[in-house]
Image 1 (cartoon, helix red, strand yellow):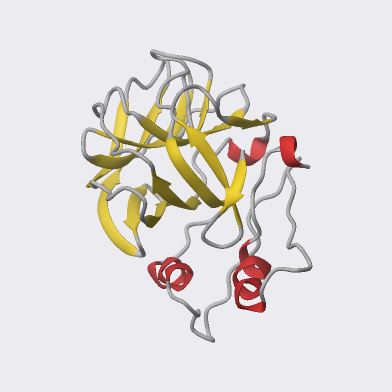
Image 2 (image 1 turned 120 degrees about the horizontal axis):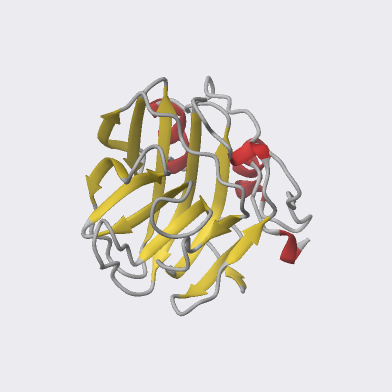
Amino acid sequence: MPVPGLVAGALNFNGQGNFLSAPDSSLWAFGSNDFTIELWANFTSPPGGSVGEPTDILIGHDEGPENRNKWFFAIGGGYLYFHMNGPNLGPTFLALSAFSPTVNKWYHLAVTKAGQVFTVYINGAAGASSTTAAAVPTAIAPLTIAQAESIGYTNGLLDEISVYNRALSATELNSIVMPAPPANVKLPPPLRSRLRWAVPPDRPRSHLSRESRLGVLVAPLFS
């Protein structure tokens, strides 16, 4: 359900089965292409579980459990990381960055792929990186927010979820976290599919500069 968020409205998840989905699209079939996923998160309870069984999957694209085609961005076992799997790949955990968030506090979380290098960012600062020549498996399935594989139901708020078809630089990601971006930093619009992108007319001007650059991804339920 939508609630007040860090920028405007956020998505509120209870950790007990509610999530959002968007129709399958080539926009999240990353393959060997560069990309960025970035969002704000505020957790109602401390993330737990393990790397293999995370309690909080922020966003994912999967065909189901085990070695089916999938990717997701998650927190489990005290790490924020990017996971991918497939029948010709096997479970792969990338850029595991130590992360134990304080509840009821906003964090900016991101993962980028530049060439063969995956990097996780927390509040604009680079965490761990991993290198692999493997392509991200393509799932024939909806994009899901706040769970994947029917596990990892996020308990908390997610806001400003955005996907890009290139790797944002550290400077660009840090500009999102900063109150005002440097004048020389200009970001492209995120990828768009059958999703709603809008800035309500009554939004405070202080928020408009960020949203005009980035947009806001909201599933069709709120179209």
